[in-house]
Image 1 (tube, rainbow, N blue to C red):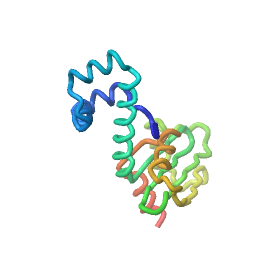
Image 2 (image 1 turned 180 degrees about the vertical axis):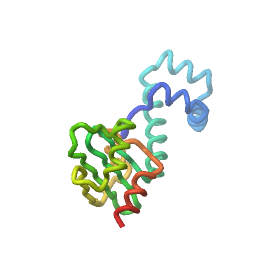
Image 3 (image 1 turned 60 degrees about the vertical axis):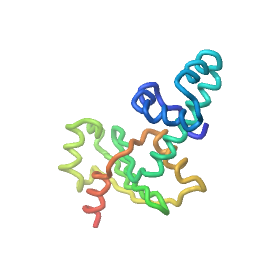
Image 4 (image 1 turned 90 degrees about the vertical axis):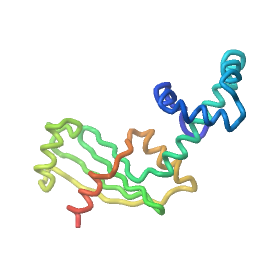
Length: 156
């Protein structure tokens, strides 16, 4: 398995897609029920293959990721050639960026001495989607990039 198995909830939400996946392998609903019952290892392997296919599709379309912790923000723009990063560090220990109040403080004080910025870019490894997946495994979430784009504008 290249990525991670989808959760039960994700599998339930992707049920029609999973049925189509099984159909492409000529596996009927009856056969799937039999496989799950009599060959659970084979069933798990099919779920793993399906999970990797879904991840591959999602990762190939991801353009922005955000990883926000108490005092740090890591905002990624995933271009065709490289990963670009805006990193924000809050030097006020009373602020938690994960809260509405803390983020509001940041928006009012983003130019203060209590906020440090770093920008960077990095080329992908041979497996661009694996690089993206690794960021997600480290806590990043897929976004539309509004926050990254806001930073891009204020940094100009």
